[in-house]
Length: 71
Image 1 (tube, rainbow, N blue to C red):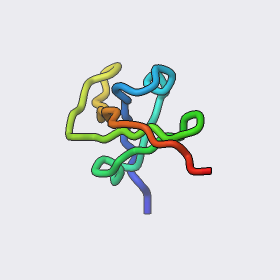
Image 2: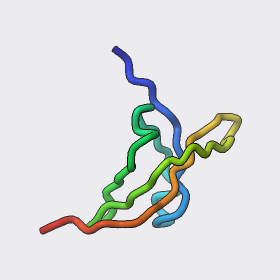
Image 3: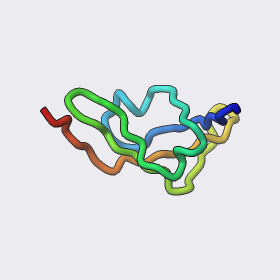
Image 4: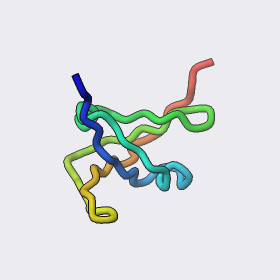
């Protein structure tokens, strides 16, 4: 069984994360996307927004906050 990947763009959060090319499984569209960055995780959520990038429709994940990694 093949998993459909969706292209995403990150909005907000650390600048070095927003420019990275990313894709996620289609099932992640309803979930919080947690990306490890430094000593923590940056949290992003998709609320149904899409935008066109280079002729392709991509899902927009907006930054909601950061959590630190427990030691």
